[in-house]
Length: 286
Ligand code: PMP
Image (cartoon, rainbow, N blue to C red):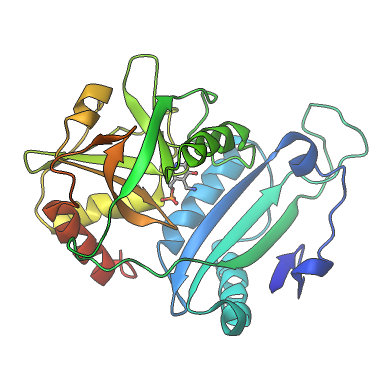
């Protein structure tokens, strides 16, 4: 595949960065993953806003504006479409760059490393509850740091939580804090439905402000479904009629089992079908 590195488009296997890059040594960087289908991106403007927020939060100066990012992203999609097919995720990454020494403080006068590559995404699911099998997740205490709103490349905490779910044969791991409230999942946000109403945890430092979460909030409103950004306890999750997890790669994934326990009646829900139908139809315009 063709990748982007510091101003050039090159074959991915020829991309080289310094081992002193602080992304490599410290996980000192910010990233985004933007989904595209048939060459059309979902949530590009929102992904750019979050990228800018993340870079500002960790004081990485990056000269690229949204228009330049769009050109890079579109080219990664178009140059890789013959190889990867119609469903493509674009990974964009800015790390602080290579210092001459391994010193914790932010170095001055170092250029950031700007990297992008494209990968094949799974084909989108059909918004039909009768054919969607539903997915299973693990549930465990959130043991990550307290700056989860920053989309940092330092993902070990997330990776370890995801791995637990994978080892238990599950698609994801939903996390709860010390108060027994759901934060998010290791690489997705969480929604529940109870008596026809949707709930998702409010944005704070305990979770990533997911772009899909933001788009799903719009779809809920388009579908005239009442929604509250409110704390969800573990007990409320387990007693929900429907549970969904959302992310750029998974879109809206209905969950029918949590830690082996059946959610609702064990089938993919009607509200999921309703909201995912709206999402599938509108996702390029949201
Ligand atoms: N939470 C975490 C921890 C994530 O890593 C992700 C996606 N990478 C999400 C939520 C979902 O975010 P988005 O909808 O922007 O993909």
